[in-house]
Length: 162
Image (cartoon, rainbow, N blue to C red):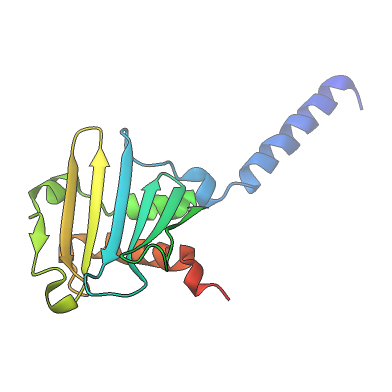
């Protein structure tokens, strides 16, 4: 083969390789044009053990925290993890800034009668909003986001490991 045919052949192979190796995770972008961090968690006031569990997400970086009201018996734990760009995009695709901004700060009676409190806090370059609600009674506007965040919290929880 002469040099120009070899170059065309190489270009063709590289082009096909780039196309055939593409996945949804590679194609999806991180989402909006501004920074988003999401914090979520659940807490129980009348509790023994790790009573406060939180998740901090910034893009694909995830931090899971476990706190106790008895730190001598149950020391603070922090687990660093990651989520896929696909998971991140699934979460932020359900964030409607206008809806989030209009939501109340508190729904129901979080942690009344030790029912537990759960929250989500969304922070962007333009606003920050924390929404607290009763465990098991998620406001419909954020239901999809909360479900996805719960799954990530469960996955990062070291108590769930075998």
